[in-house]
Length: 134
Length: 332
Image (cartoon, rainbow over all chains, first blue to last red; front, top):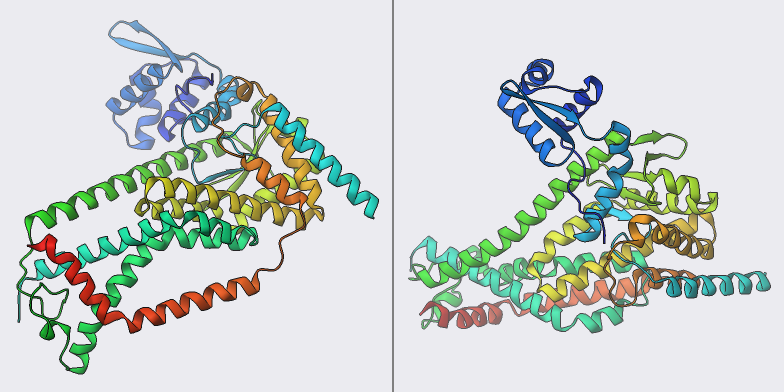
């Protein structure tokens, strides 16, 4: 069974916040907003809800310190990037592959081993005939 | 004779819907002979034909409604007596005279329901395109561009190469494919994916999915699959022309499939498979002799379509009357 696509890839703000947390190790909504909010013109509520969404996606852990949640990355940047394409592929395999994606071999179809061997045999046979003719 | 604009617009909308439904129903019944007729054509011509077939209900609706409007418009322009004045008995499909029909609640309900279904389908497609655009943008952000390959390299254990994007299409290759695939396979794959970029296939396939909302569900699936298959085969032929060996492309397809299916993601996945696989069709086509030049066949199709349009122009007046008579029971 394909891995559940808990989330495929990140939205723009999610990516910026994850980058910030991967660089600094941890942060609460206020500190993240101080670092990113002004330059992006977003409110602390937006930062708070994005952090909560990332926590729900399983990318962050959190602990309550005083009145605020402090968030930390659950996976490293490398771990996240390494699995990104696989998560996306799992999502495309389970649902419809978007028409905007054309893979060399179909993402959504799977030929059996016997079938592939039969095709391989046909290719070899054709190659041999071609070489004999030339 | 003057009446309500709402009634006239309602009649035109009903005519449009009727023509779309007729075209889509006819194509659904004719799907098998159409497939057989296109089977021997070159993939590029086949892809073009399936795109036109996807657009056929929309074209049928527009052309049918235009033909229906022709008798009244020519009468108005040349100031001659027209069909509306010759026939009493029923409401008229005419924007010039606009019969006494004020528009009925039942007909509006029907038009509203049809419009709601179509809009819901288009909205779902729009949402899917939006999500895919966001995912591809995010993928590009984490990938590294390799100028020598002309492709984005994504760190992944799944060996795969693909072209992605709507307006700006780019080629992506996984690091695992780069590590495992021989150079010959990579050359074929890159030539194939560049053909997708050059042909703007993503845009055409997305457009076809949007146009297919006017088709019946079964025909919709068939058209999408045939178009996708013809598109892939057209890119296989392009790749074969680049590397100069059709068998090498077939060989690369089988090798790439083997690599992909042995990856951990695929070996554990429940991937859909129905009918003869697209892989089999593509490989066998490459092992056969290349299809003959379809220029003559294309010329015959264009002549047939032109003749059909001329015939339809000649039959505009009876068609106009037939549609009015067919809609009459709905308007009582």
